[in-house]
Length: 318
Length: 169
Image (cartoon, rainbow over all chains, first blue to last red; front, side):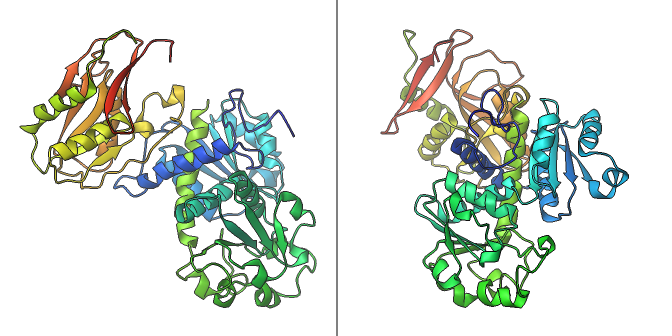
């Protein structure tokens, strides 16, 4: 694990963004600080800056996504890049082309950056190892492994509302087992020095080794949410579940769905986050999702600024 | 550090007087990060301007992004007034190649179409690479090509100038 980090170039600068695990704290903070400057660009009459003029960014989505793909596309366009969206599941791959052949062909079309989502863990790493040195790769979600830009935008959101990380209690609730988002959040929270990270969920939806990541494990919402500053709800990923991990969605909602009553255990000024897409009535009640403590829609707005920051930092590290 | 630079507070006083006759309470000041913002704050107060002070960081508009990457310490730009039809004075500490001012003007036009833009600089050190000139200057100073003039601020908000010799930075 020590030494070589495939995300960094010879100068220790960010070359690819593949996972938050092992990312130096200064780089994480630099991304968050830069994103703050891009946030004000989004409030202007003309929301574009010329940084990535003439660059081609390929959104390479081997797995369906609306919000992530769209916010990456908006981010790239606001940086004045040319964006090409490929839903690869429906084209080359179904004709038998390998992942690396697809990437080699797109590189021959003078791609400068790939934004990759894939159902296989490690897909973005594989691509990053095989592209030319001037090409940058961003992992937009790989299997159950990582979703670093989501983790970063969640940190941006927490800092926006809570200012400091050093005294926070953060609870991540629900289907941690299938969640690459949760993994990225845990690494980011730890890197930024959040002293207490909790995960709350049924035994069947928590990885058996989750406590090794330095988090506190709870199976009960009332005690798990006690006095937390931030509640992060995860989506119940029914499409990733094979076999009977849960009796039913209704049963899950009864014990782990976020209701005003359960949220009352958290601090009165706690914020409620969700990476989306939300299953209302399964992991979160509508009155909470739309309530005064919810910051779920600001998360989406912040996501654009964070992705602009990541893209412009990467593209500048030639 | 053996080359004597003028006193920054004296230059600011001179710059303030040179601007006084040419601004109205509606003139909008925009300081360019970081030294230009310090100067703009002082000018804004001394000139009694009504428009809130703007600040600008030109990192997203720099022409050396392709060779040097994104500046490691970008600060948010904040323009708290309507740029369209405004009379604007950009404030920077040292006017040199003119590239920062080019970037700042490009950024400003993404907020709207100003009525006019003028430029105030504490020091004009020459060496322009673009057709840009300042309307208000504290002093013209000549230093060796590779040297850097840096504006500093102490804990009492007093401004001073420092010369960073080539290769010594």
